[in-house]
Each structure stands twice: as structure tokens, then as C-alpha cells.
Image 1 (cartoon, rainbow, N blue to C red):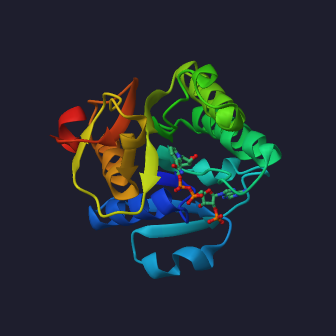
Image 2 (image 1 turned 120 degrees about the horizontal axis):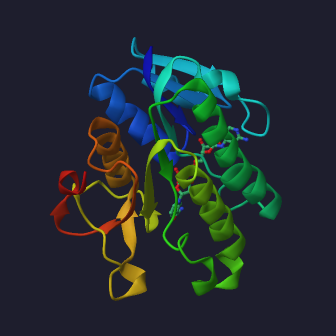
Length: 210
Ligand SMILES: NC(=O)c1ccc[n+]([C@@H]2O[C@H](COP(=O)([O-])OP(=O)(O)OC[C@H]3O[C@@H](n4cnc5c(N)ncnc54)[C@H](OP(=O)(O)O)[C@@H]3O)[C@@H](O)[C@H]2O)c1
């Protein structure tokens, strides 16, 4: 039995969370489309599963207790990939998790996914996709944690966050390392089960929210 399936394990958040989990004695199955991107993480606790999220990836869930969806179509692709990855692959992941008896699902969503109408029209398709994927997870009956981070930064993690939207929207940011830490806590306790947690840099220990 593997502790965690990380979907999007070669991504900027996915790789950080995979590394943190391995450093904390979790066993991890990393779903990636190119295994060379995580060759530096190879160790006994890691299994690599090469799959394309635009195809059937249901078998990746076999033997996994928990799932993290940290994949995304990225800012340089169009609305087609937003629909296929941020919405449809996320929705399929929830369905596969249900079928395979997964215990808990952690979704990396986004600030603004609660109310896509309230943000600029150019990111609305992305936020609608995130919103619909989140709604699908909530209705699934799975134990879930939905994380809605602000704009992601590659800065060092601080270990401290807040869940209230900062007064200045430009301050709604968070290092990817801190999102990875939050995911690790969500997988380690029941404190965030069936909750949606916004995440921005702040002054409270990440652990206190989980
Ligand atoms: N950027 C922001 O400011 C922001 C803010 C809030 C939330 N988010 C969300 O946070 C999450 C993580 O962000 P990030 O910066 O870590 O994203 P990222 O670096 O772009 O990582 C995306 C991951 O998804 C994988 N992926 C995409 N299409 C795939 C496919 N067809 N098959 C298999 N894997 C595929 C990528 O694989 P490859 O490595 O092969 O490309 C990569 O591992 C995303 O869901 C994003 O929407 C982002």
C-alpha cells in the first residue's frame, strides 16, 4: 500500500510536496508524464507512474490511501487545456479515487475559485474550471481538503500563513513551499477534513490550521 498518490508530481508545487512527503517517511506514487523531471527524487519510498492526464489514468490509484491533485494546465496554454486538465482531469481523478477506495483527497485549487465572477475576465475560464472541480470533489462523498492559495511564489517557505484575504490584493501571495507544507499537514491529520482553506502568506504557523 502506498501512502499518497501525487498527481502533477513534476510541477512546482507537486515536486516540493513529493520531496516533503518522502523526507517525512511517507511512501509516494508520483504521477508524471515525463519521469526524467523527477529523477533527482529517486529513493526507496518513491514509485513513479508515467501517465498523461488527458488519457485514462485510473490504474494509478491502485493501492493508494490518499491523493493530492497538484496538476494544472499552466499559464502558457489555452482554454482547451484549462478544460482538459484543470477541470476534466481533476474531475476524473475524483471519480477514480472514489472507485479505488481512496481515504482522502487534497485538491490544490486557487484563490478566486469560490466566486469566478468577481475576478478579471481573462482568468475567469481557469477559475470556473477550478470551481467546478472543487464542487465535484465536495459532492463526491470523499474526505477532502481544498486548498485555495493566492499567487504562487518560488521564494523560500516561511512556515507561516493566514486564511483571510489581505486588504491589498497584491499581497495575496504565498511561496509554493508553504503550500507543500500545508498539503503535508492536510495528509497527516483530520483537522482539515471536509474544509476549504484559503492560503496566503501571514504570521500564523501553518500547522495551526490543520
Ligand atoms: N500560478 C499561480 O499563481 C497559482 C495560484 C493558485 C493556484 N495555482 C494552482 O496550483 C497548482 C500547482 O501549480 P504549479 O505552479 O505547481 O503548476 P505547474 O508547475 O505548472 O505544474 C503543473 C503540473 O501538472 C502537470 N501536467 C499538466 N498537464 C499534464 C498532463 N496532460 N499529464 C500529466 N501531467 C500534466 C505538469 O506536468 P509537466 O511537468 O510534464 O508539465 C506539472 O507536473 C495548479 O493546479 C495551479 O492551477 C496556481
